[in-house]
Image 1 (spheres, rainbow, N blue to C red):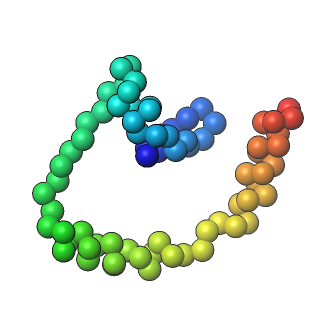
Image 2: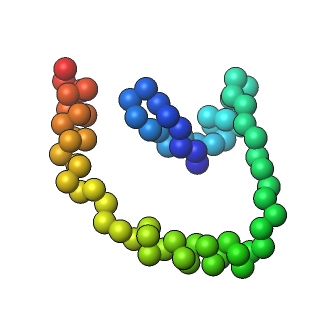
Length: 72
């Protein structure tokens, strides 16, 4: 999967369809040599930050925007 900027926000796209199989797109794949135990420790240290509450009060705004785009 890939996440990219779009005209109306942010889109999640399939990497194979939108990049690998699309000759008009270019991309680079970097391999970074980091030991697996360092990656595991980094993930564990970030888990507490990832489990914070989402902006639930922002839902009405996004719903209102979508309705306006759809109807007006």
